[in-house]
Each structure stands twice: as C-alpha cells, then as structure tokens.
Image 1 (cartoon, one colour):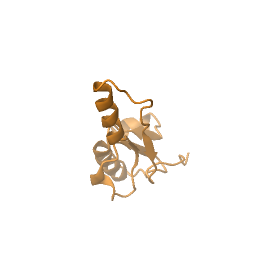
Image 2 (cartoon, one colour):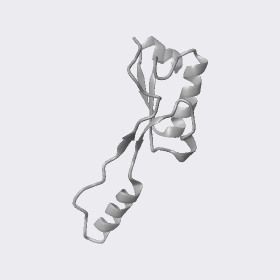
Image 3 (cartoon, one colour):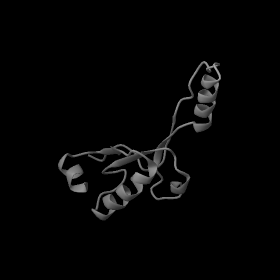
Length: 99
C-alpha cells in the first residue's frame, strides 16, 4: 500500500475508521514517510482507544447520541427538525503537504 501511495504521489489518506489509521501510520513511518509532512491521515469515529497516539489523529466524530435520538424520534413518529452534523476534530496527523 505504501509503495502504491508513493507511486501515485498521494498527499492524504482518508481511512474508513480510526483503528484502520493506526497501522497505516506505523507503515508510513516505517517506510520513512513523515505524517503530515509527506502524507496526511484522517480517520472516522473518534475512537477513544486512539486518542493518545503520535501524531494525534484527525478524525471525523459522529454525534452518536444525537443520531440515536433522531432515530428514536422518527420511529415514534416525531422526527427532529435537523440531523446532528459530524464534527472534524483536528489532530496533528493532517497538514499542508511539504511538496
């Protein structure tokens, strides 16, 4: 994967979830690539098990409690007016590419 990223001159990777980002961060570092200088990495779900990694992971955090409230209200026939929006929680795993 890292060689394919290099060959395509990729500067950012959006991972399916935060736990998928951890091995990618390790592989990028092992290949001599710096995060975020060479490749930015973004995860999804703001997993609590990954809050103390270096670099800190930028992640899209879904408001699960608000979404659950919307589902319950919809099932009860009283949907809420607005869906809660996901929030991007910035870490140090993203930045402007050095090239």
